[in-house]
Image 1 (tube, rainbow, N blue to C red):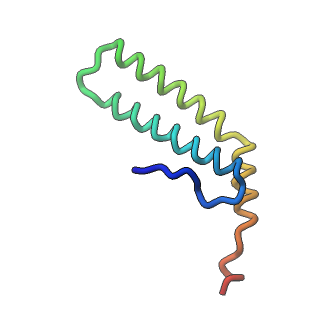
Image 2: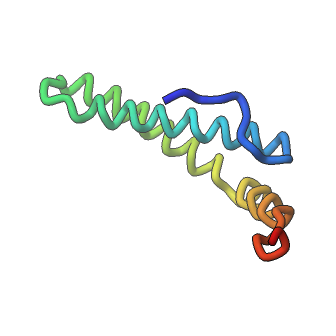
Amino acid sequence: MQIRDRVPVANSTLNTLIMELGSECQTVTTLIHQLQSPHLSARQQAEILAELLAAVIHLNVHCGEDFQTLIAEEMEELPDDDEQE
């Protein structure tokens, strides 16, 4: 999967936040795949879990009210499908 530098939103701050969210989600996915390895030592498992915890905390902070507001504002700016016909 290839990540682009932009997503089709007008707000540049929202664009940056969405790109960062995508990157962090890829990190979480990678860590989950690493945890599925059947031959992890306890130390490796602890390191992966620590990284996963940090990523999840970052996602929780990242997806807060300000981010949600920016998404809602972007949605409000979109034309209604009914208006395009």
